[in-house]
Amino acid sequence: GDSRSASKTSADLIAYKSVNDLPPPRDLMIQVDQRNEAVLLPIYGSMVPFHVATIRTVSSQADTNRNCYIRIIFNVPGTPFNPHDANTLKTQGSIYLKEVSFRSKDPRHISEAVQQIKALRRQVMARESERAERAT
Amino acid sequence: MTDGHLFNNISLGGRGGTNPGQLKIYSRGILWKKQGGGKAVEVDKSDILGVTWMKVPRTNQLGVRIKDGLYYKFTGFRDQDVASLTNFFQNTCGMTPEEKQLSVSGRNWGEVDLNGNMLTFLVGSKQAFEVSLADVSQTQMQGKNDVILEFHVDDTAGANEKDSLMEIAFHVPNSNTQFVGDENRP
Image 1 (cartoon, each protein chain N blue to C red):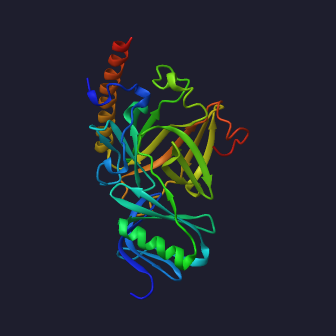
Image 2: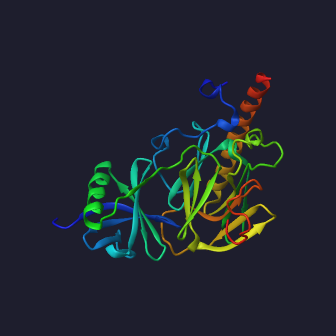
Image 3: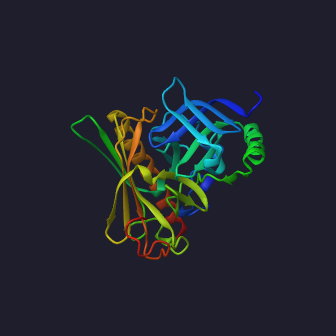
């Protein structure tokens, strides 16, 4: 277990507490911050963090022009096994970011990102379900 | 320098990422030139509708909203620049910059705010990200609850972005009452 967040439910997971906790700005490309369990996405010149627990699936695809695409689908209410479902009352009226897709010229970077996001997600989900089991 | 302020390392942000350049803020308005030439942005003082400050990782961002609906974002200001420019905007343009906050919680639920050309996704009343609707090539409804925005494929921006945003989708649950009955925009 991780004592840092041991008392929280998964819907309370947050990536960063303050603006200056974000990793130093580097290249504007998809990054995975293992320590803070966050995925950072380049949107309009800014790196926008999402906690890995908000992510439902991630996949990549290549086209014939050597372009590579990555698609990230987020958890929204009404989908099965959604960790936020218990909290839909709390977040009622909210609009959800459901999906983003990016194009990249670097297939290696994209496949690395997909693997990292999947691995981190598995790890966090396993920890959270273990915690939920212990709590019951 | 007698008139205004000059900054040598200010990035202009937008669809394709950020470009470093030089920014001059003086009595006639705002002038930004891309490092090494090329793109320039010139805003006349009388065209400025409002300015905002936002703390972003390691630095500060100035937002400038202008009359035709465009919104420029300049990044790279030190804390002391914020103080002196705030004074300058108050004294020269008669406007007080509004302070915005950046959300870094990593949540994917919040509110959508439309202002001019900008669509802002807010989490807990703080800004998570902004996109310009001027760059949206197509919007689609998927089912009753999902809105998809497709962005122009832009290879000309020449910015430093490695991964480019192509598509973004929002889920508007039935419990949301803000956008009932408008099928063209989220």
